[in-house]
Amino acid sequence: MAARGIKRSPGEDLNCSGVECFKLAFIIITGTTFLGSLVSLILVIRTRKFYKGDIYKKFREESKQPTLRWLS
Image (cartoon, rainbow, N blue to C red; front, top):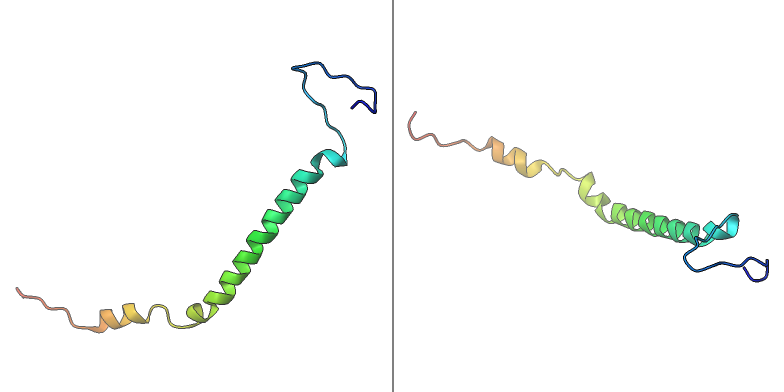
């Protein structure tokens, strides 16, 4: 601010315009999004084998067993 000849009094808001103001925030958001998508991709690769199998097999086997009715 001093290089531009702008003086700021205490309690006055800072004004920011231009690309440099939002560069750090953009980099942080982009990095977080990239890491999140990388973790998601790793989880997809790790669980692919499980979801290719028959995940409802246990429930079908339980439903085929006869139920006991004491007072028929």
